[in-house]
Image 1 (cartoon, one colour):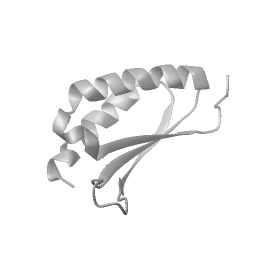
Image 2 (spheres, helix red, strand yellow):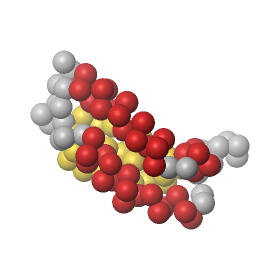
Image 3 (cartoon, rainbow, N blue to C red):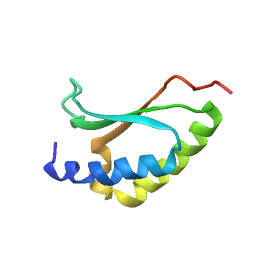
Image 4 (cartoon, rainbow, N blue to C red):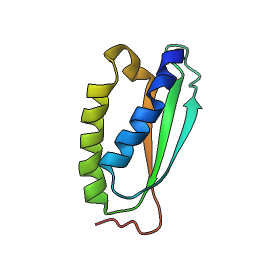
Length: 91
């Protein structure tokens, strides 16, 4: 993985907290796939609560901000996963 990927952790953490009102925690992990054509990625695992519809709407905003913040040549090194924790809802 390119070392400059790690330069974006703090700004993306801040962006996640701005976009989602109920972030409980964010974990960062490297994710390596067995296929050599896929680069090792930095995965942001976002734990949050809230209504599913609002989370999906907020996800669109996060992705737009991500594309604005992270240079095109680095975007493939990031992934985002979500976990709805206590207080969440499927509405």
